[in-house]
Structure formats: structure tokens, C-alpha cells
Length: 109
Image 1 (cartoon, rainbow, N blue to C red):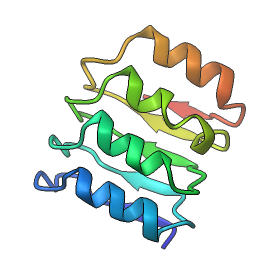
Image 2 (cartoon, rainbow, N blue to C red; image 1 turned 90 degrees about the vertical axis):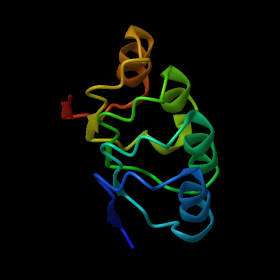
Image 3 (tube, rainbow, N blue to C red; image 1 turned 45 degrees about the horizontal axis):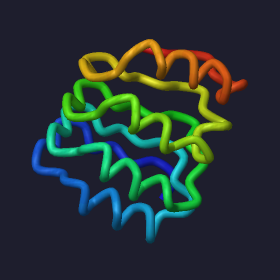
Image 4 (tube, one colour; image 1 turned 90 degrees about the horizontal axis):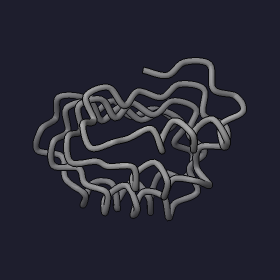
């Protein structure tokens, strides 16, 4: 599986991200828009996999902070699309991190 669309699945939890980390090494595109139960811990678990994201949509995941993007350091070097719209706990620190670590970035929201 290279693309998983889970937007508006408001019952998705960190347990799902841990499973994805262990079972989806070819995952390139992930959409978690409005998955309100996803936390930094779940994103950390996801980062332990061997994913190389090209598109990561985390819009309106209101529990995520800067830590979520920072812990994905090894997974975002090929990132082309990123959406963190409505992630109210994220700061400018994310923008600087993405600018330094995502040379292929074409679109950010």
C-alpha cells in the first residue's frame, strides 16, 4: 500500500499508526485530516517505520504539536506536499524544520 486516505475517520487512534509503522513500509501518501485522536505519540510510532512520505496531510489534527513533525525527520526528506492547516499547537518551528529538511517540497498548507 502506497496511499492511505483516513480523513474524517474520527475514531482512528495512535494504535492504527503503530500498526502502519510495522506493516506498511511502502507508504508514501497519508491523509489523517480531522483524525482528532491522533497525538504526537502516534506520529512518533509512525516515524519508527521505514516510510518516505511524499504527501502528508495532517490538517485539523488538533492534538499535534511541533514534536509530530520533528520526530518524522527521517521520513520527510522526499516530502512534496504537507498540510498542517488547523494544527493550532504547531508553531513557526515547523516551518523552519520543513525548510531545512524537505528539499523537494512543492506545496504546503
